[in-house]
Structure formats: C-alpha cells, structure tokens
Image (cartoon, rainbow, N blue to C red; front, side):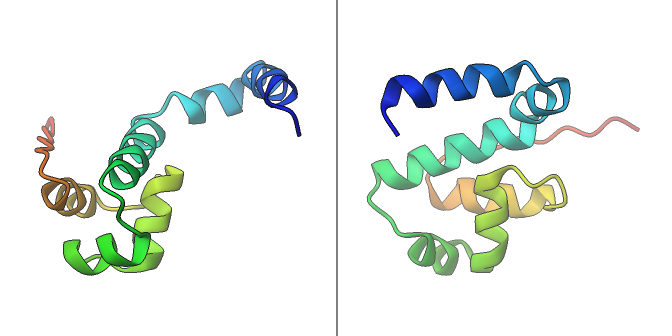
Length: 91
C-alpha cells in the first residue's frame, strides 16, 4: 500500500467516532510514544520486556494502547526507557 493511500485510510478511520476516541486516548498516545522511544533505542520488544520486568504480552498491549493494562506497567516501561511517568489519581 502506498504511503498516500495509507494516509487516506487513516483519515477515513478518524471519521469514525469510536476510532477517533481510541486514537486520542491516553493509552494509545502513550503506547505510540513507548513504541517510538523503544525503536529509537534500538530495543526489541523482548529486550524491553525483560529489562522492565513486564511480560511480552503486556508490553505488546501497552504499545497497542490496550486500556486494560495497569498504569504501574506503563511506569515500569518508562523507567527502563529513562523517562519518568507521573500518574496522578483523583479520589
């Protein structure tokens, strides 16, 4: 698929409210950021999984923006990528 076709497909997908909501979610944005930083450091998923002490399955879920992942797992991954993730909860 040509890059232009892919961009058009992404634009069409964003017109679907549920897709747009998912793509704009905190989990999806963090997942994309973790994916980008992992690749910049030239780490495989397996390497980062071992270093951050989260399962490969969990790391895969994190990078795909799965909302079922515990925030503590995000924090562990960010720490191994030498970044801080501060999570504030409101009670």
